[in-house]
Amino acid sequence: MVKKFTCSFCGCDIEPGSGMIYVKNDGSLLYLCSSKCRKNAVILRRRARKLKWTDVYEERVRRQKAAAKARSTKSSSRSRGSRSKT
Image (tube, rainbow, N blue to C red; front, side, top):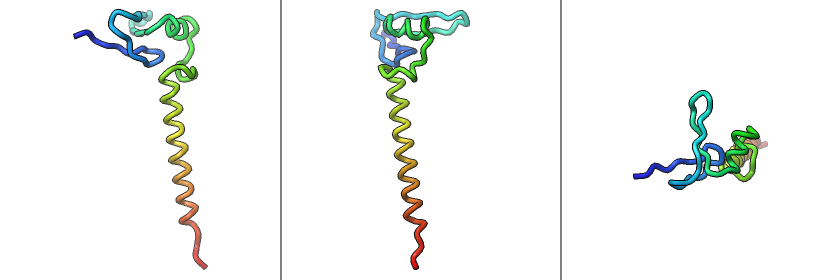
């Protein structure tokens, strides 16, 4: 069985026989799916969380939207309960 890896930068699946493994000086491995990911991660040292085309960015945005929705729901329920009947 061939082991599938995910790209260390963008988060997409790497098909067997494609991609590359980059070994850092400290011995850690980066599995990269394309030269685009290699250039952004290794050469330009960009953060995947800040680039819109990565899956990591989309996951971060999804979490932020869920947290904002939870906060708005929580604050609206508090304002309804704080009314006093006179």
